[in-house]
Every structure is written in structure tokens, then in C-alpha cells.
Image (cartoon, rainbow, N blue to C red; front, side, top):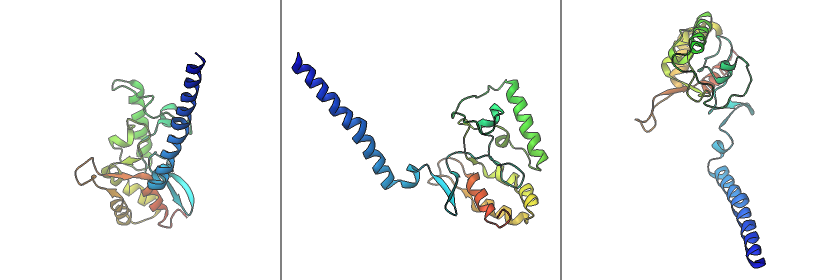
Length: 191
């Protein structure tokens, strides 16, 4: 009996060290060595300062910035509150959804932005950082006006930030709002 107990304890300790320590550390080390940017959270830095992650939406206030899809914090009416991805979704007949969409559309109109479907509704994850090129182009006039920039210059900025389909046929073209706003800030207006 004591022999079996000793074997069980030794095997448990061995697997704890192998699977609880060595395997996770090896995985972390390999990912940091091969995919460093992704393993560090795909952070975006400007002048050495972290300004966000290219994987998670950011909140942008005011018409001088390109707006992304509404994130989950808007659903709770508590800005800054952490929302778990995919939670708090409303059904298509929800009165709360209708009210939310109407409020978002009104806010965008006040800022001079033409409301599009994606700019007034959440993504499935509530944290999608990307918008369609059409959503970005719908904001060009308002962003140009708010920043005192030529519309053509802002339109060209959007065009440079459109990411095409993966491998030429997978997915849909998109614009990363964080990268676009970082480039907009680099135009000199926001410095």
C-alpha cells in the first residue's frame, strides 16, 4: 500500500512539474521568441508609449477621430467598465437594442458622421477593433472638417489603411481604427 501511495505522489509531482510548469513556460518562451508581437498582446506603440492593442477596440470621443463599432462599455452605460467578450447581447426584437441604435445614430449625426449599420451596432465579441472601408469613408468628411484637413488628404489616409482579404480571397477588407487614428494623429493636427 505504501509503495502504491509513493508512486502516486511521485507521479503527481512529476506531472505537476512537467504539465504545470515546464510545458507552459516552454510554450510562453517559444511564443515570445517566434511571435513576440502577438505574445505581448499586439500592442501598438507611439513614441515608445503604448496606445492600445490592435486586437481590441478603443473608445474615441469627438468628431476629430474615426469611430469604431460601439464596444461593450456603451451597453452598460458605465464607460471604462470591463466587459467580457460576447456578453450582454440583445436579441433582434429587444427594445433596448432599438433605443441603443437610435442613440448611437443620433450621436453620430451630431458629430457630422453618416450612421452606418456597423457604426451603430456592436460586433459579436463587443471588442472588434475593425470597421469596413465603407464605414471609414462615411466618416471622412466629418473627420476632415473637425481637424481642418482637406477631405482628399483624409480619404487618402483611409485608403492607405484598408487591409485587403487574407490571401486575396478570405474574409472581407477592413480598417483597423486604432492604426488609422494613430496615422491621423501623425498628420500634425493632434500633436
